[in-house]
Image (cartoon, rainbow over all chains, first blue to last red; front, side, top):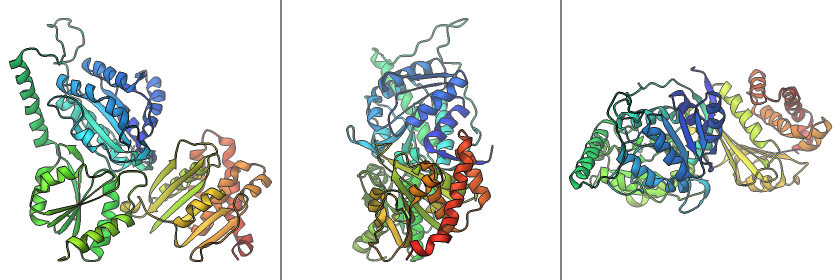
Length: 356
Length: 185
């Protein structure tokens, strides 16, 4: 089990999903995540599990809602512009409290865009495009190993909180291969017998719906959801820190970008600039609290993303006016390279932070 | 140690195959390594390249600007990636499908007619393995055991091709010794 194997991010996600008992997959092919469906179409057939290549992404996620309400462990996967089609169903799944796992391997947008890697769906995932007061849990892996670990966690959190969970993967990571260990699922199974629709034999009938004409009941429902979100925000934020303890400048990034930024950080440490890296692993719940603690000590934050500054807003909410914040970003296409980041950070240091 | 590689050519030349084989060889040697295939909508006949980044430290395996080694199996990729070779780096060019032309004097050029040599060996498809052999000769630290293991793993469904490719790899490995002086003048 603990032998390293060379795995693509997409395949790692598919393998992990099977390992933790995913019993139904619904999807529609779209680059750069098609490998997930391709792999599962072969493997799930062998294991006599449900694999459906749906007629569209809208079909796929609605099938997922149906299967989840009957207690199956469900996953669907897609990419940016097709995840946009799924937003309505995400809002329904949140209201219905259905544990579905949605993998979004990001490509470049807006609109149809193209298959270049990008991190442009931060807002789509964390804020969401569906209607009403709802939130989805969002996890962001930065390596193929984390694709495995966080797939396990996505299923666990989805079941634990009865909430849709999005695994937000950079297009680069989905397509990239690196050695990883296929670990065992470390999380326990959650008992769902109290709410699933499995036939009302020897019990009163149940139904799962989001329509609620009674104003008071609707209010109560939303308040109940918000109590759940508060629990999530209290219990589940996960982040990674690298040399942050004594840092004057903290670089922030999510996903694969955070990895090359650690190398950038090492580069500046050699020139005696006290630099650190802060990476949120859960994008919702965002680790505001820890960021605020760090911002008391650090004087400057530089946010680096492969978009035009979507996480920047959350960094600002965390840091508030405790420190200055700058941004380095690039919308699409060629990934931000280490050398580019180093020279951009250098420019910022020269222009803004001459005192360091 | 950090080493970055770009392997490039046209679809069907086995670019991604030798990319994964090289990645596997490094993995078997307990290195941190990433493999990023880059291709657009075009497959056979279109431009294909992949990046392999190897390091002793996990942090340095991603998104480097330039490569220490570039393999270019056709003219288009030679033109496209010549600027991506690091100062002091090496470009290995398939002179059967690209003009012998040196535009930079801060890098090392190795020209060899991989396609012609592959045809002579009886299979045009193994040109990629000859190129990999040449690369590994320059690298110098790949163990033959890992090379064999990597080929066996990648070609496990096409067993008849394993030995042919390993032979081609060895041919490439020894090729440069014999012809280096002529090619690298």
